[in-house]
Length: 266
Image (cartoon, rainbow, N blue to C red; front, side, top):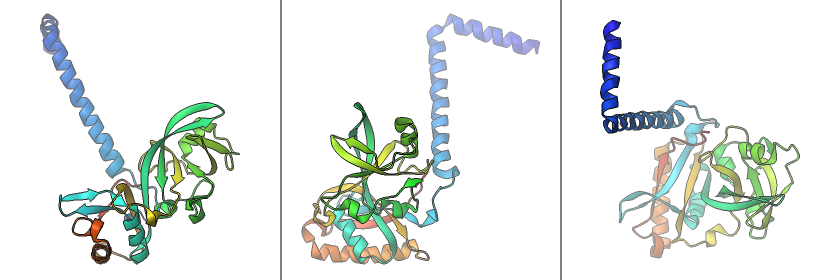
């Protein structure tokens, strides 16, 4: 024990004599510990915590593949997603989403929040229903439909003090009135907990630009359907789309499916 104390005293004296070296050592250790902590946090979220969703093994992320550039995770064009949904028999639901930032105003108090713009079957893919109110319906996505919004549980608690009368309340997103129709359960967070609101895409998705690849897509396999079976079916659909839409799909956009590792984790 005496030797250990003596070594510690000697080490402290040497460090005090060389302050710049001491700062470098401390900073290096701090960065090293921080990196390992962050890595464990990612592994904990992605691998160790169970998915709080029904049959999570059925949920897959869907990308397009650029055969010309070799990009295996190319963003999705909405008309292609609409065609996949119409022509595929492997999936129970396919949905698209995109993140946006909007200004929320409640009682003249503005706040910039992250919003996930989603197709109306998004929550059906997730297999999760709101803790309060309802989720999105097909009519919420019609071009002239009243604007609606679903709140995350944490945002409802923080911004609205867990108001039990929140359903039906009007909020303003970028100076547009939206009606709160639902609050999601505690712990539901996809793609991550940054998003405060889910809002429906409105309009004719099939009429969107087929060359505009700006969306993520997610799907739920039907029970008993293997990923390889869905892949083969989507390959056939992609070939048809190449022939039907050569200007945007010929030889460069090809759908691919990958099992999602992080879906639904809070």
